[in-house]
Amino acid sequence: VQLQASGGGLAQAGDSLRLSCAASGRSFRHYSAGWFRQAPGKEREFVASITWGGANTNYVDSVKDRFTISRDDTKYTVYLQMNSLRPEDTAVYYCVAQFLGNGHWGYWGQGTQVTVSS
Image 1: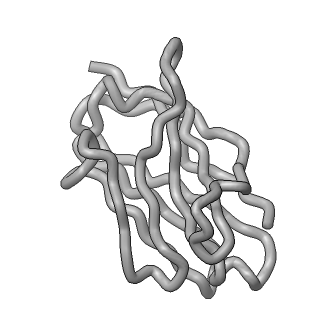
Image 2: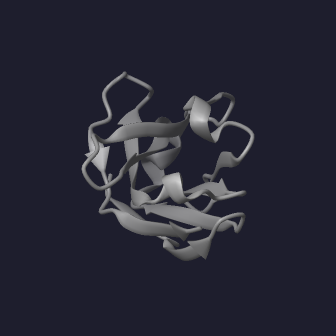
């Protein structure tokens, strides 16, 4: 599966952005999906994930109650709604996928830059 992320940009603290990740192939419904991010000078970190079928989601503590991951398998797309943005959310965001939740994020899209100013 190939992944194409979009929706990044410039925002001010407190603003909202929605990232989208469009996947190729009808088999995407069989893939768990998620988002990672990497800030300048920092290691890449897990942000959020959603299981294939969409029944379960998981978030890093720092974004809980602010970010929401969702998916629309009719459009082969995963979304990350980001509310109440903070400067520390500034990073390159990557969408990822793993087949049937096998534990390995084997598919990565190109990153999309999110920059939040104070």
